[in-house]
Image (cartoon, rainbow, N blue to C red):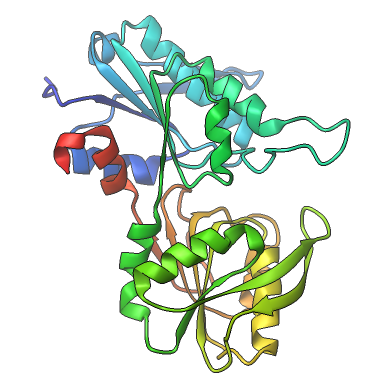
Length: 306
């Protein structure tokens, strides 16, 4: 019989690495979820009622690609637990898909971030935990209280052994300025920012650089690495300004989709430091240091564990 830990942990199929780490950190064992596919592709989920009935249930699931499938699984897991008699439900969504669609650039576009927040609100969650939302303003769109956590202190701890008196922290675009400034403060190093213009969902161009980088070794920091276009363009600008050809990338959400690996191989990347908000990819063409979010999440879920 399972010990009665402070919460029952239900892990979605998008987050096995983080699920194992959080289970170990909290001293619990994930609820045994059964999953199967019907011939038409529908997902069928079953949770053991005796493991969730009358308990505080935490559902962990990142909405990584395929975003729609993983969001739907999150809601199916929550509904299954609610109908099995869970006393309360909380969602841990380390990476929130569609968060970049937080405004409409022109008429005829949807407000994807608000729509996803509305969908999550149907999960009957009493609280929602996220990590490094692309736009923190999206917090106001969720129907349940949202706790927006920052992975920067964890990333700073992982980066500190690689910091020298030649290190400079760089924001690859204006949207990452606050993040770069905060990381630079944690590491005790100067920071700089690349001015970027987006041409499309895949392509960007740089328009200039603010800060001193000549002869420095950059740590490029952003909340996510998707196709790698922003970081590749920023690296080209930095090399043109005299940076040492020795780049460290630091991000919370290492999506690495589409042409990302091909682009980043041309930077070149000495090291990628990211969290397990996204399931870590195997056999990358550069060293990849994965920092688990488990301690951060556990402190948020169990304030007494601080």
